[in-house]
Image 1: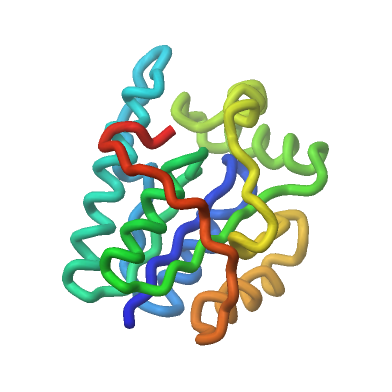
Image 2 (image 1 turned 90 degrees about the horizontal axis):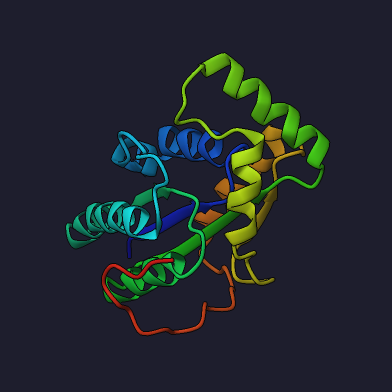
Length: 186
């Protein structure tokens, strides 16, 4: 049985750091929304993001179709996570959702601000843009994913992620089954 891992969370919560490390450790393909979204247009709306998620999930499905384990790194704002769970079911893959967050806004803001200044890239989220995104982000329900606090020690977080992904007897509450409508991921 193959495995579909998703890393979900707002920018600056550590999801990409953990996803990259997990992909290297397990030697599994890693699909990142940042590689799909080349340029974010001014005032990019839901239609833009739905089209990008559609591409990302299509790539994930191609891996599952081949029977290959896959890791997907994206924000997964809302119903897009239900679509990924449906893909896992379709291909009888273990679904391992990981939700990253930061429990301290001051530390989180400092990290986001530092990253923005370092990368000097307009596509990188600012703290203000992140706050707008935060208003639309649906928090994961308890027991539906592994919750990882990005403020905690990265080494311990990685150990927890690796154990969660490779463990056989992981019990999660499934996400609600919702009708899948192509192009309606948010």
